[in-house]
Length: 376
Image 1 (spheres, rainbow, N blue to C red):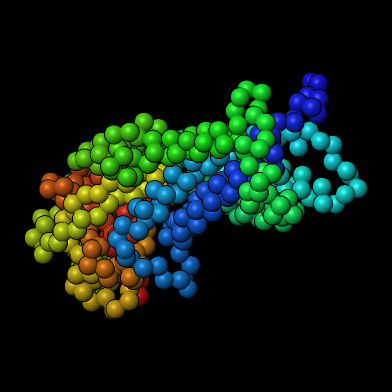
Image 2: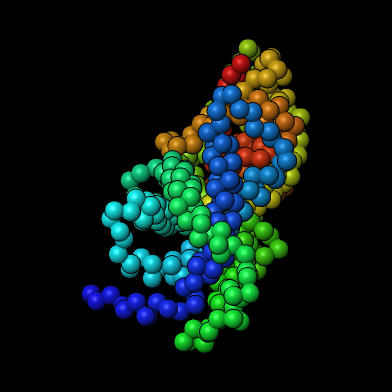
């Protein structure tokens, strides 16, 4: 394949100033996506030395929604950024210049890892995993690779970035000729910003309810599903077929408690308005009724500051058990929920009982719970 001749790359739309401006937008999206993703990882893999607060109750709903939106917005920004700089990639590097080799290597690692990160992140929102590796751990590792490659790339390109960071009279769009298509640099900026805003708005409705009617690109519609709430993992997929007359719920603590479903229903009930917020980016608020976990801990004589291991009837899978840290177990909004939106839990929503807690990823709101184990 014959490469284009250098004069083809003389368009002002490939000017370093254009790359710098779009790079700033892309950098902001990447930073927001990384920080919110890092927070999600901490909630799912909390180090023993770290205490994550249970409030604000809707914090994870906001951060994970922003995470998926910023990742989606990064796609058109990355494509635009690559388009502005691709002529440079055809220039033959000086193999004796260490700086140029480092620059090319950082671009290779940065672009390939970011493209893979955005791709598997998007496929995750569709709940489709056509690969043999674990998504969450791979997604997290790629994020750190991107950050490292980005720092190297910025260090190498810092002089050029500083030279084009501010708009000077000679770099104003109107002072340069238009592209042969008639598109000016200002027009390019508006087009890229408009495309990023469009994909963001048409995706955000899966977590921002007011935008639900225009969420045409969102993989999930939050209010569609049994009892007005979507379902990620069904009872059939989890191998749960309901309960029989001998079913018992157990609290294993200093005193072992055992309840039938009717006995659970006769315990003092509380209500909480909490969302289900999933790692795929969708969230939906709901009304839950059940027994406060802290009341069950008090009944079994658990000491203050106890953690709780939650055990599901689910067969297999990564989330058949979860752990409630002490702050979450003691929070009055954390329930062993028996009812959802005014009626008994549907089987796909965790019948006979499930955990619902503030500021928690949906994968940790364990369904089909039959046992709580106190961890002092």
